[in-house]
Image 1: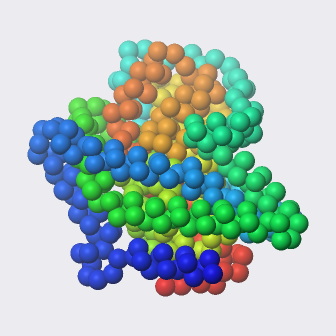
Image 2: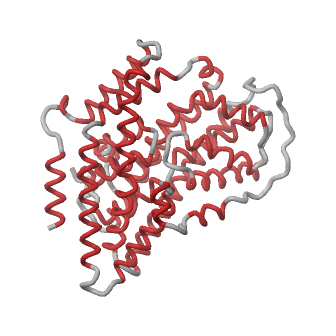
Image 3: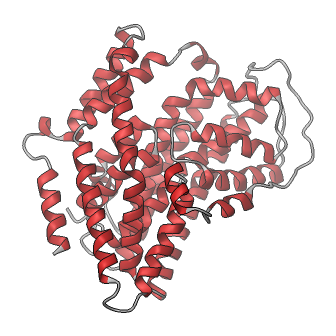
Amino acid sequence: MRDLASARIVAAMQTGGPFYKQLWFQTLVSIVIGAALGIATDGKSAEWFGWMGKLFVRLLKMVIVPLILTSIVTGVASVGTGKTLGRLGAKTLAYYLATSLAAILTGLVLVNALRPGVGADLVDTQGADLPELTTMGSVSEIFEKMIPTNPIAAMASGDMLAIIFFAILLGVGIAHLPSGRDRTLRDLFEQGFDLMMLLTSGIIRLLPLGVLGLISTAVAKSGAGTLQAVGVYAITIVAGLAIHMLVTLPLFLFLLGRMSPLRHYRNMAEAMITAFSTSSSSATLPVTIRSVRERVGVSNQVTSFVLPMGATINMDGTALYECVGAIFIAQVLGVELTFAQQATVVLTALLASIGAAGIPSAGLVMIFLVTEAVNLKGAEVATIVGIMLAVDRPLDMLRTMVNITSDSVGAAIIAKSEGESEVNAA
């Protein structure tokens, strides 16, 4: 009965007809119009159309917490207890660690090959002495934050790690209830999940208007002066993201899932565009879940378990950015990082990407955690990070798109390994 109800919801919310009536085409047109308005109106488009983007993002954020809670609880409860849950969790964690590490190593190779910070005159002081390495003291804090002392407060504040941990325990508890006594709770969360998906589908219909407001505002506020000074830095990150998006992830999809990358990317077009325009993995999560379920064909059991966790801890684009950004800062300061220090940057970038919030420019805040791991700190570092902020918005848009694409690839691969033969079949 539940599958039939979900199918009716999906059928009701899908748009058919000519290509110009499709949501993806309308959204692409909105991107072009928004960019043109941002340039042509001399910055006034942010005032005229910015409110549409803000309202759209607020609507998406409105459904995030109840969607994550109901999604994970139903997913974990349906997986059951014991071996199945452990197997699914192990596969998810292994995939996320592998792709994030691959992204970091891609960035590491590029930043050492292109050396974008060498000779960049961004601060007055260069050649600062590098103190001895210190151990990172905040790793334990990430694990401590996973256990909420007050689950209601965690949901109110949007603490995603705590919400996910609590939801997983709740799902496991429901799965362990005696047969018959669990049915009421299962139905409650399943119907709540269907309701949130219905609301999400309605909000997504407003995507072209939201994108118009977001893009026109971003273009109107971006400055061109600093872009030239950090152009090679931006090109390095864009190249790394492109390699990960167009080479690494398709290889994972083809080799591990035996699926067509082109078909998968076509199925995920709406979610990619939403991620690009919102720069938020968390805000895009409702669209990602909808696309993976309806278009990619992954079951609710896998989708509900893999994607909410991915939106919080699987940040491939952010991990690449943290690594390149930290080494770029060292290069600008004239500091040569040893192999051991670069290894520390790699490890810290991996942990920082796990702890980064799925919100716009969160990676730029977390980069201080990476630089401090090798004792790169002080006014000069803060100045360089401030300059990096000038080009962060377009880079943030690209790395968010890479983040959610990696999540969707992981969901498809894991679903295929669980015997779901219809994944990316059409």
